[in-house]
Amino acid sequence: MDRPYSLLFIRAGTRPEAPMAEAVVDRHGKGRFRAFGAAVDPATKVDPSTLHVLEQSGYPTKALRTQT
Image 1 (cartoon, one colour):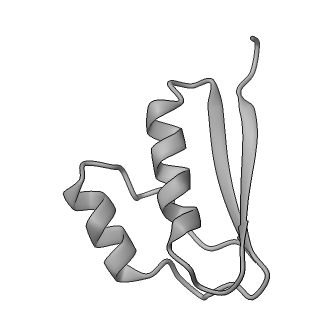
Image 2 (image 1 turned 180 degrees about the horizontal axis):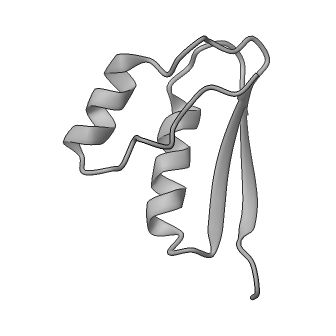
């Protein structure tokens, strides 16, 4: 495979699942997958409690952001 597969997680509103899914796929995909999230009604920023849980679990959060 020459380039990673892209995955898009779509959610409604400010649910934390998409940023969490992005972090898990990016880490465990080992370069084979790149995850992105999108929302029907996006928040202005990723929920701080979501970032906290990911950071406490050892996942990088620097690249996580909301998509408009």
